[in-house]
Image (cartoon, rainbow, N blue to C red; front, side, top):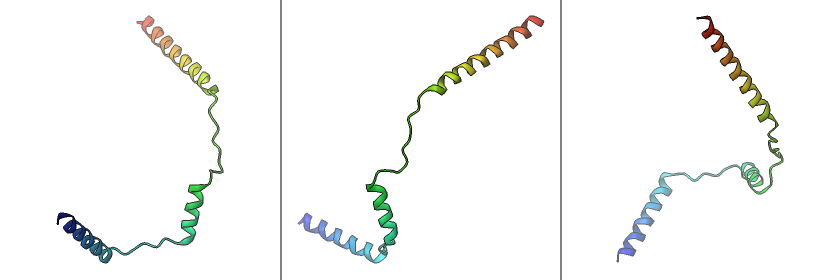
Length: 79
C-alpha cells in the first residue's frame, strides 16, 4: 500500500511541475553546435611547458636576493 501511495504522490508532483514550469526548447543550431563541441576533439592543441623559463626565474630571484642582502649589509655598516 505504501508503494502505491508513493507512486501517486510522485505522479501528482510531476503533474504540478508540468503545469507550473514551461518546457524549454533550445534552438536547433545551439543543440547541434553543442553536440559537435562535445563529440569532436578540440581544434586548438596546447603545448607542454619545457621548463626553460624556470631557470631564468631562479636567476632573477637569486639576483634580487643578493641585491637585498648587499643593501642591508651596506646600511648596517654605515651605522
